[in-house]
Image 1: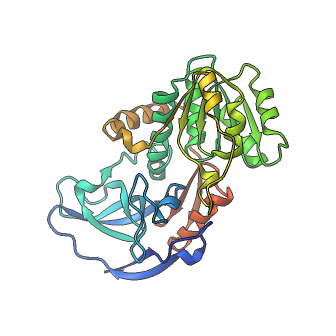
Image 2 (image 1 turned 135 degrees about the horizontal axis):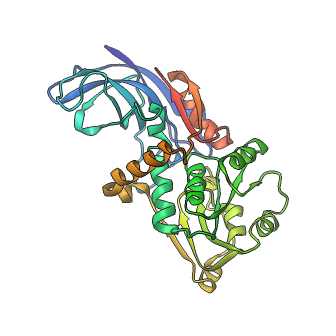
Image 3 (image 1 turned 120 degrees about the vertical axis):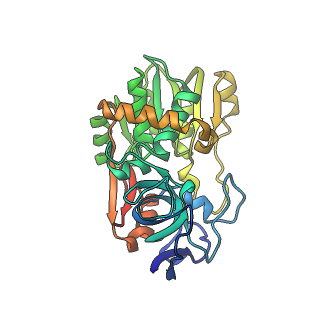
Length: 332
């Protein structure tokens, strides 16, 4: 059996382009004892993958030039040599961007596809949901009546952060890059939402939206929005540093305000984190997120692109703000 696969053709300088991706047809090996043959149903495209396209040292190894790109995939078991995963099982795992994959059964996790759309296990009930869950609840620990600000609030992680903060009784302000996204955040229950692209003075807008200051900040973006947040921090504020998408394609290190003095004066806790830091607690997070989803307290939103050949375009769209919620590609 043959499969289409997508390889990293070259490392990008600045913003990635379609030239960084190469399609190739490869033979799929026959599964052996303990292995399964998987048919890809959904592929996740995520901002963190931009970092893996460069050779720079990071918290996860870079992609290799000439090798398949690897990311989150929901797949169906179509042939099984494992008692653990019968044919028809729906699984999620970190797998090569291929139409078909052969892998050890223990390398993927079966998901309850009868409880939510299968693609949600790449978003609301998957890695982005867990990122929101642990970053907000473990680091920020919002209390009822406090003010929480989320940058990149209409993205896969940010939209869940805002909903979790509302579940815990906080006042929630989000920033996003279009009027449509702002309207969507209001539908989700955000108290205020700011279109940073059309707001001439983001610091003034934040001050108006958060008259009592900011207690928790979930930072997905960095840059000018984060600079403005630092001026509004309350005593003992907490910041979960999750992402810096505003700088991912920069070819030189950006120069900005030095925030240490403001953090010192407000006794602010600033903690960077990677969701894999919490691997041993993932079952806890999935269980709680699934319960809140079943109770109607959490909503998922996806931007779905169709077709295996559209995976690179969907990935590149992340850096143009084309997605609301989780960006996924429906393959089969």
